[in-house]
Image 1 (cartoon, rainbow, N blue to C red):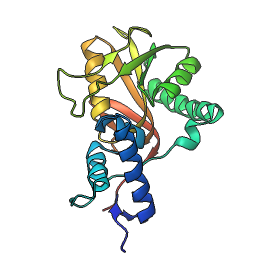
Image 2: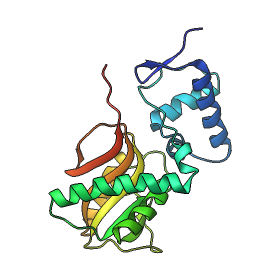
Image 3: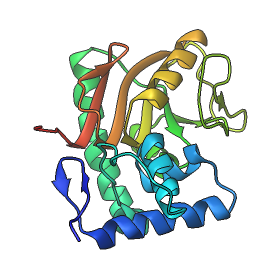
Length: 215
């Protein structure tokens, strides 16, 4: 049997079957496609493809996507701290170039929160949390919210933190909402950038790893 092609490279059938099994398990536990995409660090289109495969239905070719597994970092507070220090360094470099400061670090729930907490501590900044809506298709007027239990962002310089940028839609959503609250998004910091862009809505993107397709 020939291996499927995802992200322009051959991936063993076992890896694909593992993803299909994980997607189906998460769906059976009540997660919707957007939440499954967050857990597997893939696009929502890829989740739809995986779930269709899990039901043995005939499907179109696999989307061009890359699955990111950073659980070896996430399970260790020490490793998370070390990674957050590297991101802090990149954030400070970007802020210095723009002659800007940071007042609040905004962590995107759920995967961005651990990193955001540590980065906020290192930068001596407040911590804010952005909760996404539980919908599969985000659209204007149905976006997430800034939690009232954490720091305020109104009128403040903000650093946005997430784990992975896939399509950039969540970063766009957060940037839009921050601007509507008179906040100033200064930089987006992530572990992995799968979109491969320098800016989103003119806000710099800084990542430890950037994935670039060559096909």
